[in-house]
Image (cartoon, rainbow, N blue to C red):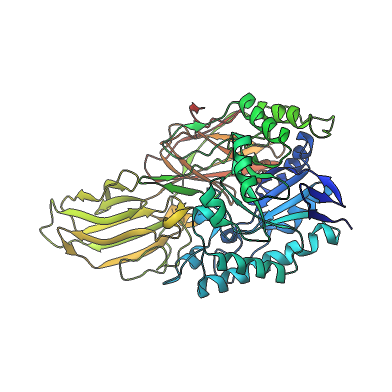
Length: 566
């Protein structure tokens, strides 16, 4: 058994001063077949610790249906970290931000009528206590003082940027300690005096989040944390991308110099991110600071280990810096290898008929329909004499395609602040709405999705029917075009699917949903992790929302994440 504690100026491992040199690696953004590889490469860069968030909504998308299977086996992930000889930091939130769907909070929770999030509220606290106790049942036996490797647990996440309810923070601490978590607890906030004050709690060690000007930020942190080790628990070494924007990168030498400054000051660090991974499926979040901007599928983050797990120039630059302050293994990872390049023909897929889906005889939101998918269809009959009538929507969340008598006549975009469309003559009005990613921070956290009323035609209300559309049934949906291909591989391997020239949609390999593609860019390839492929025959399925169905799938040798922005 070992001990881990907070001393007057240092972390203490078995009573001796210890510096944490950690990297963020989110198990839920990496295929479990790749966990061991990514963890090993963290050790080879010189890290002694791995940090991960826990995504509540990934584990419990439907209330009461908790899962730890497949890519959600947090215990197995922590065991693999321990097997590599590394410590672990766990940040269970319950709010995590992380550019992740709804900031990690389940939609069934945020849709609770009258609920007040991230503060003292009976309904919210009852649900989060159940959640935290489930997480801590996994974490508690893996703490360092029980023979495991978990050395720190974080309370909430950058709370000072959101609220200042000390009773709420204290309740999180009570639940955590009552769940037999004995390792030191931390909070994290940006090094702004008001945020540090609002987000901290006596007896919980305060850490900072920043990516530059280490001396200045550490001085601010020290003013609010007079004793104990200084730690930047989110050292931002890159940034995320959103659809319609550039691909963000940071200069490797500049980022390494900032890391050097931080370590030279004697601080501990958690590099955010060491390996970003991918927003597989439809797990991406969104930003909205006056303009709604959904996050792309890739979470490469310009991290030291890229989306496919290959070392970058930043990996080697960081490794050289870390070697000045700690022992670094002599072994280095293999350089990036080109992935297979080939093409296959895509053939249209048409199902015999649309499956029966439960519908609501009203204008309903995703929450009303208890729909955890991304597509919702609204249908209404148009009375005679409505040629040239104007469809007006209070707010579209987030993208709508409008059809009359089965013919698509236009679209409405939340990002473009569009609310109205002129209709041609016809009898049947259908609107397909895509939820493009839930905002992961601030007051839009947990907002309803779908058509937000009023929804009128020439000022008149219509009788609506709302029906969930499942991606698994896409071939039966009249608004969607589906194509598929089979391809053979000699052995499982990573692949990059080129989506340039395609419109907007989703891609499956087998039954694994890779994520979204969109001509809006910047991302032009989808990463296919090797463990979802197999030797022999593999199936690729493309679901297209906007353009004619593609006739060919092109696999390319390397990722293309868009024009650079440094």
